[in-house]
Length: 263
Image 1 (cartoon, rainbow, N blue to C red):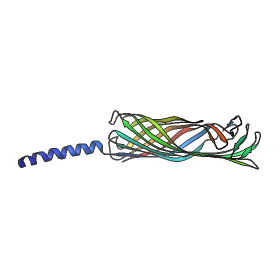
Image 2 (cartoon, rainbow, N blue to C red; image 1 turned 90 degrees about the vertical axis):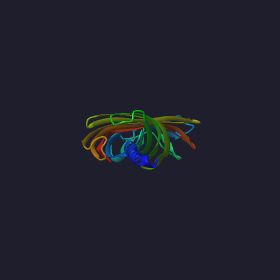
Image 3 (tube, rainbow, N blue to C red; image 1 turned 90 degrees about the horizontal axis):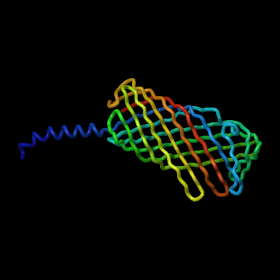
Image 4 (cartoon, rainbow, N blue to C red; image 1 turned 45 degrees about the vertical axis):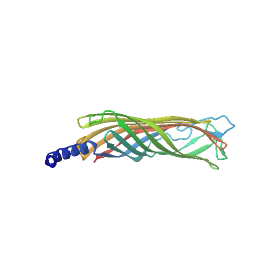
């Protein structure tokens, strides 16, 4: 048996190297700027009153797009891939209410001129399993979570109403991608609809991305790419908190651009 060791050692080393190469993690860091637009409607009043909505563009004056700096990171390891992302969005505007808004005991009546400041930040962690592991085709399913931080302040000359919610959202996710030469395209979709008691929430997020690699390769340890993409986050909330009833159907969408650095 001892005479077999010199012959086994090279084979074991070769197998170890192959396994290490196949399972070596790869990280893509993607700083990006999104030019986003806010759309939808918001209604808020006491529970005993029938809700009427205010359009976020026509009534609240939040129709102008804004640019925010965010980031995404994709960590691939074997057939699994993690995506971590942070997408902030903030908007401000002046408008005139077409429906009453009541929140926290404060009522601002229809016809009142108001100033609105709003932010909707989304943090993301998603894992998917790739059913076609390799460099050219990607198709996977998985699970994850988004953390939605929604804050809005509507102010008149005399009163101020605040809508403030931070909500963790578990989601089911799907991922698809295709590589052809120095170009690659991918789509990451996630969402879930939840009902609990009389409350209801629906969350859908879509992230479509195209990249052109100007140095390095798909399988290389170091690469750089120009990034152009589009992302939309759609949120529907219908809930009662204390005596306040809120019904919001809003979304943030727009193109983004940036760089991708792979390690």
